Amino acid sequence: MLTDECIEFITENKERPWFAVLSHYLVHNPVHPKPDKLAYYKTKPTTDQNNPGYASMVSSVDDSVGRMLDTIRELGLDQNTLVIFTSDNGGLTPRNTSNYPLMGGKSFPFEAGMKVPFIVKWPGKIKPGISKQRIIGTDIYPTMLSAAGLPLHPEQHVDGLDLMPTLRKHAKLISRPIVFHFPHYTHATGPFSVIIKGDWKLIQFYNDQHGAYLLYNLAADPYEQNNMADTNPEVRDRLSTQLDRSLIEMKAEMPIKNPNFKPNGKVKNLKSTKKLADKERALFESRLKK
Image (cartoon, rainbow, N blue to C red; front, side, top):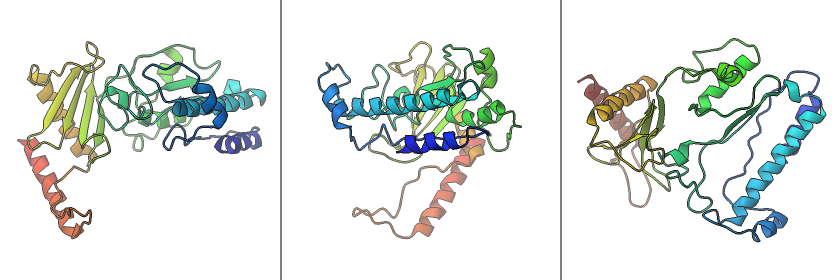
């Protein structure tokens, strides 16, 4: 249905500039495959990818993307249309999919939770190729502005870079730290923050009284098997300080202990919790100044 609506929108606006964001519900829980696709994938041999229902939904997304690209080509718009295909997070493991050999998956601070496809198509404007440079979703906004010939708004896309020079000329992106902040619990993991700078990646977990760190050199250890937090304390401390400063500049919400937690799940006196959050932030900032 979403694909049908998007195709109708593009067709109605084919004579003028248009912008469309198509965010499929797939692939996502609940796993509701089409019966004919499920029957097909049940006959296929499996390895670590052994969920035919999930495979069926991936196939349905492929069908929709194909229909979209066919429509753009049939309308004569393919040479003048920038198409980006990407995802918001890595695959949900272990129930739905395997991300092997990368560690973790959705909600995890490891690479399998953060590395996703980013495929760009613009015939005549972008040369085919593969780049190993790391980008992030906040780069999409300034890239779209640049592609449309519009002025950038750096006060809005503070953390984003214009990718058009890289896409069109394979230019090297400027060096920058990339920060992820996840200050709560999920089905998979506790609160954490991550900073990636160059080849180094530091993960800080907050559900530990003294803080717990993992440090990886992604160039030498892309599958995050060798924690160097204790053997390379200089890099760990340098990245930890930069991470703290970044979070303060962002005014990021920090995880705190909830003094009003009740075993039955009910929380009372939210005002006192807010005061505690402000106190925790002040302590956090004062620690950094020292």
